[in-house]
Image 1 (spheres, rainbow, N blue to C red):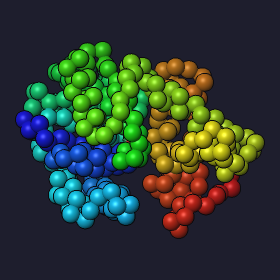
Image 2: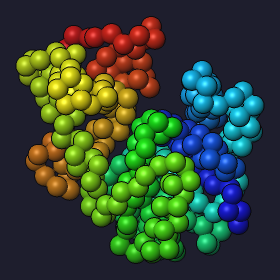
Image 3: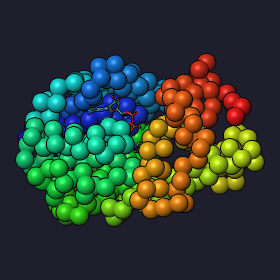
Length: 291
Ligand code: NAD
């Protein structure tokens, strides 16, 4: 097992961000996806993000070359055999996550930590398909990963203190600060965030305010860096809906997803990643839409 090598599964919004931060922190990174196009897009996003750091004078072209050389994109899960930590960032779907954890259980070294970036799902349930539940842990990064400093650490029923200590150390090496939550649907972060986003969709759907004005409540009156609808588009409306459906099922009525959010997801209008969602991003600029 190589303590300087880690694996990231899923090269989407979160996975490519985690891979970037890990490589910037000096790790060799195996970046896995089932889709070669997703790997290509992931690497492109990483290079774009690094060039923004370069423009700000925070890193050099030599650093970029070095960081890039540390990331090995592949669709071959066997490349995870000697990593010491895997961080899974595939879609928010329990069936998919269990399949991947079963797969990596048989490939990764017995001592490797298996972390999940799930936003809301049970760490204990994911761990139940492995033979090492003490080494399974939630490591919930915030989007965009290279910028956001907080990481929510979630302890499953059997997660050991040794595993918690190891992921705290890892997050510190990534330049992040951790906070701890129990394994309950949505943990702390999304119990707070999702009701606000969902309410923003209800306000828009009821015609009480425009999307821009709802977002201005967030930026001007709450001092958030972006409004709840812009944030939903950034997260991905499919991910927001999956989290809300799970919280609705597990906790109750107050998390019932807004019909407008559901409609946008049915129309595959998932936000920034598909080019439209609450807003239209097709010409590289954010434009409002009428609902
Ligand atoms: P995404 O849809 O952008 O990316 C998911 C990637 O996983 C895709 O590239 C897809 O091809 C790949 N994938 C699908 N099945 C796979 C498999 N079996 N093996 C390997 N790769 C597979 O999703 P995302 O927004 O990056 O979310 C990933 C996870 O992170 C989810 O659990 C989500 O809840 C969580 N999360 C998301 C955000 C956010 O703001 N988007 C924030 C925190 C946590």
